[in-house]
Amino acid sequence: MKIVTVIGARPQIIKAAALSRAIKNSFANKIEEIIVHTGQHYDENMSQVFFDELGIPKPDYNLSVGSASHGVQTARMIEGIEEILLKEKPDYLILYGDTNSTLAGAVAASKIHVPIAHIEAGLRSFNKSMPEEINRIMCDHASALLFSPTKTGYSNLISEGFNPDNRKPFTNDNPGIFHCGDVMFDNSLYFREMALNKGNVLDNNELEAGKFILGTVHRDNNTDQPQRLNAIFRSILKISEENDIEFVLPLHPRTSKLLSKNLDQELYKAIGDNDKIKLIPPVSFLDMIALESNCQMVITDSGGVQKESFFFNKPCIILRSETEWKEIVEVGAAIIADADKEKILSAYSHFLHSRKLEFPSIFGDGKAAEFICGVMLENAGE
Ligand code: UD1
Ligand code: UDP
Image (tube, rainbow, N blue to C red; front, side, top):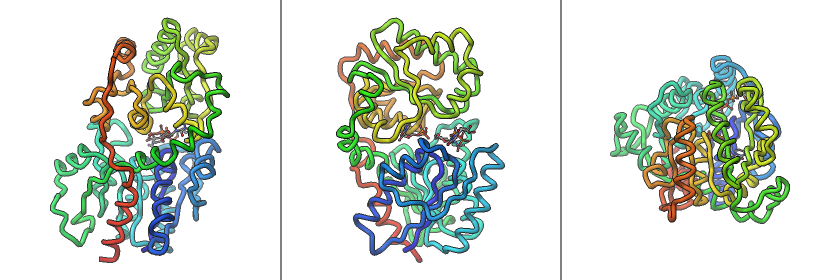
């Protein structure tokens, strides 16, 4: 079986490591993988670092689309992906998550009848102002195989009319839907020990285990709306000033570029002058796992970081008005605080005083990637 995998944004590169590893370890004679990097993310610390660190094969193609408006960026990707699909004629196109690279792959493949396998299918925020919500809905409805990481994702698909009977052959008119666990959980189990052994990110940033909060902010509705960005950073400043706690914030380039423009000047200066708030460039995945495993708490608007916080048994304050990973909120391990200062401060205080949080098994058994490969092999060419 031949598959073409499209990746482009940081979290997709990391997710792809799980499938490439499963192919290498268990299906090397059965699956040939061709990797296409759209070039959506391109800085060394947003892309190459993950290939070097996580053992992902070098991309066979790089479309180098770079940054642009949604339409321009997606259109450039569609053109490039179509050309590659026509040449490579794969059994499946593999798409991850909900970025513009995902949408481009879905449009290109469905028009020329290449079956799509969507990994991370069924997740919904029910907020169509998010570009990701549109991308994931469109991709799900163009796919032949849909792999959902959670029960909620699987139920969302059924609510949208997907048939759980799974009668073969699977096509985008008769898709197969599977609840299979999360490839990122596979990765967290696999890389955790490596990350803890590598261990110099704490020293390098003068952080002490258990005595810092890890934060990330990159959603466009937080970075691009000054009112929201100010509320988030005012909360961070207040928590750091009132508690003996440090913050480390590996900043996405989108956020770094907008901080000085969108934060009130006095706040921007106060953050810069506060040596307990460490704004650092994006870190590698192993460093990120080390930070997640050793922090006191996580504060984030990232989908991936919310979940990893749960994988490493840390409470999480979610800087969004909703989440696709609603299980982690339902069990009390995460709180939706939006970009609302009062809610953020109250979530911090709640977690600080919580005695025992529960982190039940929600994301599978660490073998989602093997399951996905097995299903594709069973159905290729039918
Ligand atoms: C994209 C995804 C988002 C995902 C995030 C992961 C879409 C619509 N959004 O958002 O779902 O959570 O990736 O990180 O696909 N930039 C750089 N260097 C880079 C990459 C980006 O400087 O290597 C800057 C550019 O100024 C760019 C901005 O970041 O305009 C935004 O990048 P883009 O890929 O368009 O969206 P993300 O915010 O990264
Ligand atoms: N990540 C990383 N370095 C960083 C920030 C995040 O390796 O400096 C990883 C993080 O551990 C997770 C993924 O990137 O696996 C999440 O990506 P991001 O937050 O950019 O996107 P989202 O998950 O929200 O789509």
